[in-house]
Length: 449
Image (cartoon, rainbow, N blue to C red; front, side):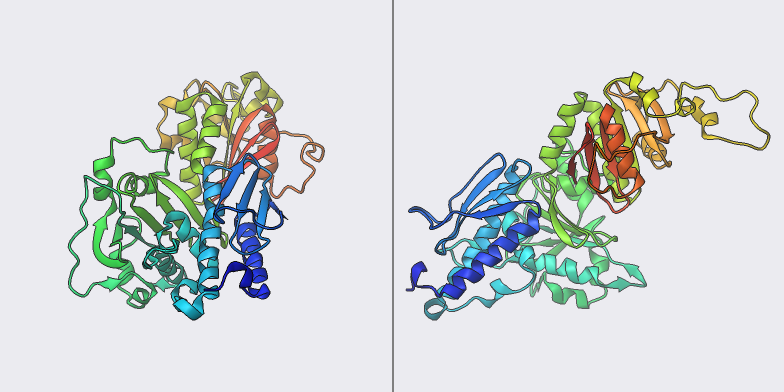
């Protein structure tokens, strides 16, 4: 068998390039530093702390330090290792192909889809283990193909639940039907396939071997987990999809009608494909930071869910929580305050938003239905409150100075400028119409999701 040092130099260099590109895809702002020859020890060792991670690879002189502008999360380190696992498996197959043959299927598809697959399930890429089908990569290909298809002139939504291998006392894998179909891109040739699993209410059930064995109602599947807490609040539209993965190691893959792909595992959305690339949500860490910053769990939960729901509907909005409610006068006009009284003698034929302030004056957000908050958040301008959940203004137009000193980078869009300005007095959640949620504090951008 050929040893690592006997592999062609071109092969080693090629896989170093693949590795760097794979990491740059998921960590576009990271920098990479080659550390020289790999030291003795297992080549798969991965170490990480704060903003630096070290990855050791099986090809010579391929040890890297990856420096990230923000600290690596648990999922970040897991994705680093997933890129390594996929490329290591491919490298060894090419290097040893003369003796062990070549599993061509492992080279199919978009490389980033394979990294996502390994992030969710390492088994198909584990060496010295009998080869198993990469059902996650196959399912992603189904979603990718479906995203390019329309049905009766409408974009398609679809989805699947991949039955897990862990213990689930609430569900048993159904007996395999005779001649089941493999859940793969070939299914999309049948127009009726997308009607069977619309991704929102019904899902295809895929067994561990990758076969389409049943159609399930996602609400019914998630019902036994209704009382279990979830790690992170979910948008209302996909709350059942998150709960469906709380037990058993099940995975849920969704294609939405907007062309976005979502991946749920362990009760939370962990990945999304948006604007042409995969993104780690790091939802658990981001929600933890948001919750700790507000120090009001109920308000944090309410605003987070509201932002998620608006993002799913592709509706823009701006939610601002002031550290000091008295600072509101420095941010908006007096007439925008709910406490302001409209003129008793309005201009004939003139109507303004402040005439409706009495409807929400002196009301706390925690006593309002979420739907009401979402409704007023859709109005142009910002929803402003304090940390005690007192609603101070809605549809408010913010006044702010030139932000060139505070934020020298180019700022795209008035909502981003408003979010940065408002965050000088507290925390701001900006919801974009493209589905992204951004958090700002003290004039700084903290995270996107």
